[in-house]
Image 1 (cartoon, rainbow, N blue to C red):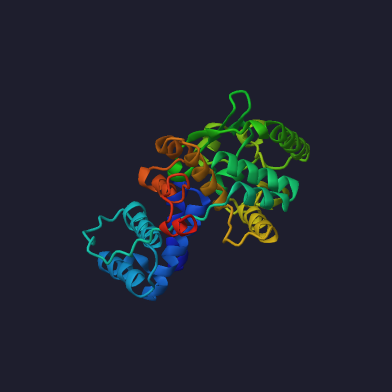
Image 2 (cartoon, rainbow, N blue to C red; image 1 turned 90 degrees about the vertical axis):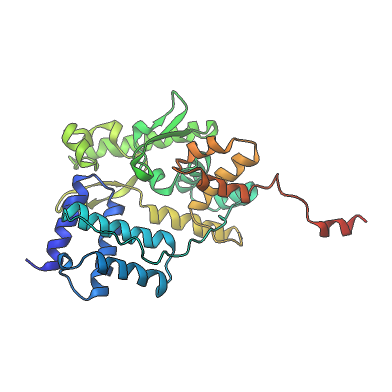
Length: 323
């Protein structure tokens, strides 16, 4: 068997056994491919701690990647050698750490958000309203299932968020009726899929084994189902209904902000930043914001204190206007 094909299959098997997301699978494989390209070999089993250290040094010194990118490469390499090949890794902690870059997030005002939403189609605008209203990551938004939108308890349940953690966040009162209408649209598509005997929606392997046939049940259906069917990238030959693509939705947000004349770099994630910032501006405790966002570290949430407006001192130059 070809060396690259062999380590790819090994890695994919290890990832799927552990129920990692498809995004993680793609990221790990990309990082391992770059590692192999750097050493000009597909025989990854012949490499070890020293090669890993030198590669991490290269990322920091030559490519000047961010700390997050370097950590992703490290995680992929450690996963492959330790968890897939079952090799005990020695100490290579003296590699050059990439410089951490603390970025102030882009935040939109309420007026800027209104103008952006006004330039979006109704379906995508509803998604954007929910992302802003609940502080969701874009992946969490598009992967919502019918059972995750709890109208009775007025809450959203985010399942398998970053770090494979579940959490509960806000279900905005103003969006209840529009979301119920969206659920009915999804119901029509679901019933058509069942009539046409379309394969059930994707479920993590552990759930699919435990609840056989659950992918065909209404409660597991996507809240934002895609318009068309597509082959499952993890199951060759299986055609099913996926959720709305995150890239398609994200592009709609960016184009709408541009059309609205917003002179900032706007992505869908800006709506999550704006949610957190406006909560703090309204006096919500930082620990509560951390819980709603699903941050593992409070320091990650504290970044929004830097863009929160009510606590900023006035600039001394403004006194020139009144003296």
